Length: 211
View 1 (cartoon, helix red, strand yellow):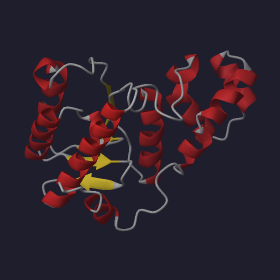
View 2 (cartoon, helix red, strand yellow):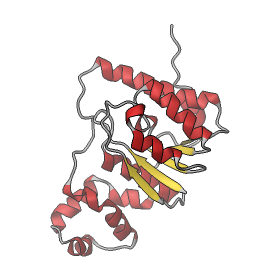
View 3 (cartoon, one colour):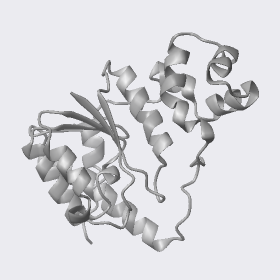
View 4 (tube, one colour):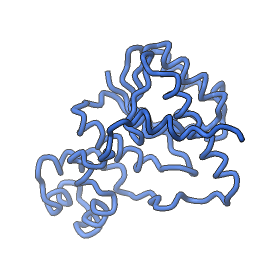
């Protein structure tokens, strides 16, 4: 079973941007997403207040979980440790798409610690600057609800005009949306990182030790 887990965070990526990368990764790796879990729980809530999330993950085992980056699980380091531990206990294989790495019971401790340390560094950077929309982040669009249909239409080779008629929307607006969201690249799986060699070593190399 393959699950895509999306949790928007105002300091990182919006839901539709995560979904773009998740879909592209799945296509590139011949994975069929069986369920999409879109988590709209407040970013300020701790894990013990995210009961729907914990119950959902505990109700599955031996699952392939697709997430964009480690912060999607949690931006609280204590909760992140607990969530990662429980996912591994339930034999999940977690694909962190941004880094092209897979966390499983067979992963090295250095890989898991490297992913967590990257988040620690990012949170430290965020604390030092004014929080706002991430550079390059796109605002939500009324077309976001059609992403799955649009990706299917693009893979079927439908033109923008055909898609606009099927969805009963403006052709020009839809064309701009498809281009701005890079949906043709998503549909072809070309948004996945190009250089995936030594991905685990690259994560480990980013660990910063205290001086």
